[in-house]
Image 1 (cartoon, each protein chain N blue to C red):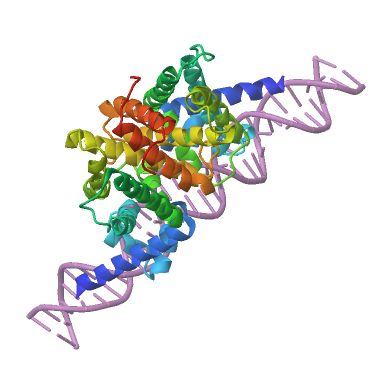
Image 2 (image 1 turned 180 degrees about the vertical axis):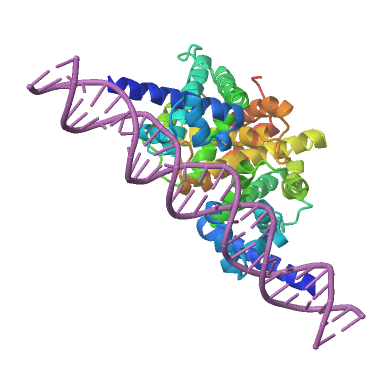
Length: 207
Length: 207
DNA sequence: GCCGTGCTATGAACGGCGTTCATTTTGCTT
DNA sequence: AAGCAAAATGAACGCCGTTCATAGCACGGC
């Protein structure tokens, strides 16, 4: 069957690309090397993918799936009955998982953003819907901590919280002087999440 | 004088590169176009800069200087006598300036990070020392809000705070579904800075 | 079992990139 | 005015992603 060969080559290409990125980063992914690694001709890549961008998006989809799995594992906790303190603890755990995933999958994780910045082509649909799914993990515990505002506000806070953690992880793992050093990152993230949520729960005096 | 011609060409190249980046982003900066814009031969670029990276670093240095100037303007407030509430307000202002600078200088600001990610060459010294200078603006007010911990801890918090704001701005300006939409960014950033610092000032009950 | 036919796989070739370097031009010294 | 070192030049190089004319293969009708 022809579709089988197609599907199989597609799989080999994605896996080879994934391995190349994991090994040396997105910048080291070259069409010619990839063809060699997947055991096909250079041009065969373009029978399966429109261009390299499309292939990278496929790799990124898998990375996101792995991230989702990692986050879901932490959420295995009894989601239903969380007290505010335990909800904060849960959000701390999620943030730490994000940090550890990024650290353990440095190149693949970096490719998630590096790529989008370089490429000006419109991202496929799933890049809009998929990451939003990941927010389920955040919004659950967040509802316990911030029951008062409406869902829309809470969603906004969830997104901003994610962005903030993302920034801390991004700069932290790059070992830039503007960020906390790696061995302090976990503590800083825990402190940050706890302080932020406590500050949100109890708006007080000055303002 | 020979050094004059050299210096003048250098200036023209940096300005042309700055304009090209501001117009269409780092990805649109091409050696051939640059030479044309600066009115010199293609090879002349390499009499002044070792490679394009070095030129981009020069542009980034100017961007950082402009950012520093923008931040310094906000710090023109009487730095000496700040109460905790006004210190928080000052930090909010700094964060908003960062957001507005990024929004108003989108491409130049993006180039600051985009470049570093792509290039694997070691960054020049000033990329280590310069950004740290910018932290002066944060650490002042932060000292009012968090007088208790030692300077080292406070420095760590300052860096984490910056990283978090950076993440919110980064994802927010990209209009990604994981981030807050642009028209909500200012409010979210203000809320975050205030909540975080209040949460840090008054560690309480659970933990 | 064989042949025609349509589709897929192929890798040389293309255009564009940053960078190099033999050559030309320049500007200063004698 | 002549000589010469140093700087400016742009054609050429190597590498990149992508294309496309061609080769080869699988498959349905005889």
